[in-house]
Length: 602
Ligand code: GDP
Image (cartoon, rainbow, N blue to C red; front, side):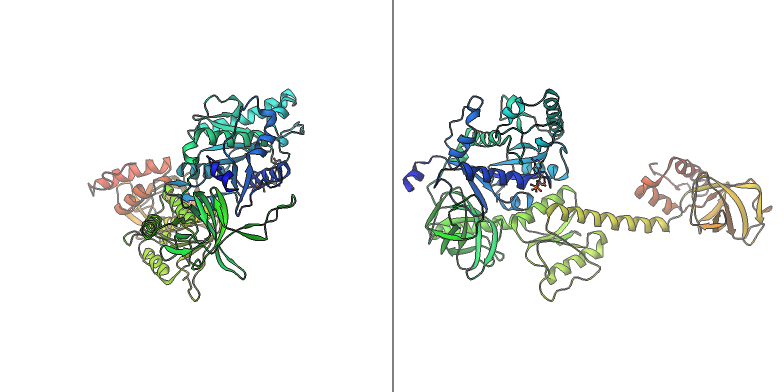
């Protein structure tokens, strides 16, 4: 076995699947895995943890009818698919400034097109610099599509009716347009001349298998052609990344690791990230599922192996793994000096993701892994949401203290965002600090955003409620219900808004009193706006016929500071008619106070 492995020049590329919920990620992975199991020769499949290997022989068999279009002579040994699709696991496949994944399949429902998580997936692929191709999935759902018994899209496509072909292409063009808006050149894979400049769109059906041939051929061909140097296999000690930390009944803590370079051997010394800093330990066992005998993919029973070559997914059992950190790098070290070097690299890497700034009134984030913490921090930064503390582990007393400190400055950021972690036992988060849990990165970010907006809205309402706003109204002749104490008159609002408690002035700036109540059709209302005719009671030292008269025009007496707050902070509520009223009020008030409304941009 090892001579075969030693002669191997390239390792298998690592493939991830991302995309919007329900667009078919799981079904596609199942189809690829299932196809591989059916098409393999005995002994061809290696067994992996957290990943599935599709050997080159299988790819060649499936892609056989395509030889004319893809003259593929594959040198890579196959493709390694990460089993769990989606952002959450992908974020843990991190490598400094990038990803352990060599290429991604972005699954898009061809009929639905781009959806929220499609955009998010693209964003995360872009930020981790992972090349991708688009699987335009569910082609069997295009009206009129006749499923053909083939893995090849092109073969099946040829057999479709003309109008069905046109419809498929229309859907593909829509994807091309959506990708173009995001700055990506793309096209249907068989029309592409230069794959380094154009994203390939492969129409597939994860349900029927049509298009799987082209998808596999392209994944293999593209990675082999354009990533050779990255895929060149190193004989040295292993490098990997921790996908998950799991407690195994009767064994203890284990880590699921993707080895992306080198060889890992039993008894190797490994350095990896932990909750409290780097961990140095010795590999007791390397575990993989027992070889499969039949098609049913149930990976339960584990078996030990002595060594494993990149790329591979394995479970490692070693002492001191209970604090191991998912998303952290893992290195096998051959000397004391290497151990120290790797400890330093890992420490730096952890520090680059964790964050604390006591001067920022921002939110507190706690996550269970380095990758998810990094993805959440990135997501929040994009939305300009300030962060005070970003750390790994359960919620502690300190986190609450930090959130309370934020609360003193800005209520909307007094949040503890918890991704797959809970408060330590005995710790209770007080009500005034908002605790937001989620197991889905983008849901967590959405909920944080929603809460911030809610608090802002309610603060805004509260401030707005305390302001005297600009309003202009006319006493309708013939509608004086009471002459004084309070005066009650029918009015027409000419612009802006009037509300109870607003002081009222005349055109010459003289204060005449304060609005007591407003009635619309005999019902008390808390506001009246342009065009409304309402009854208004005004208290003050006034009498209709003396200080004011029927037909008079009155204004709300807006204090200088209130107008400034309105114009600088709440411009969005200023309607056109209110704007006119503001100008008139400024004119009135200027005669008394030359700085009134000065410098305000209406
Ligand atoms: P995920 O959330 O992206 O993993 O989506 P799933 O793989 O769970 O698929 C969501 C639904 O779409 C399931 O009911 C699948 O059976 C269905 N589905 C997935 N791929 C296809 C396809 O190619 N054709 C059809 N007709 N249905 C599909």
